[in-house]
Image (cartoon, rainbow, N blue to C red):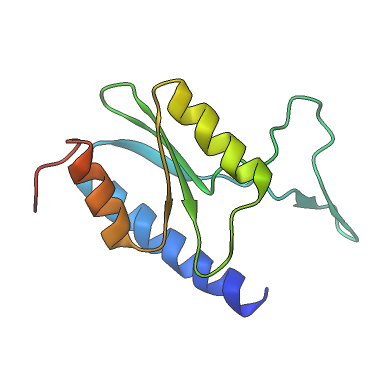
Length: 116
């Protein structure tokens, strides 16, 4: 795991802990990278796998879908940009976030949570 990946992993965990404490829905880490078969790292071969899915996915108690792409310093891929746009075009809440504060501001701006 390179330094950027490990920093993003730490940020993801902090965000997931924060969201769990809010009790506004349920959220999970999206394991979209593939899998290790014991000898080789492989991508999922399903024709229904979606490239660019966000790192953290969830559903608010209101039923609204949430997609959070966690970035430390890296840029979005075209597939990640497209996924975020698709979620938003379907009425979901999607954004690039860099910290728990970014998530808090997003949720407040969408009136999901009160200003804390």
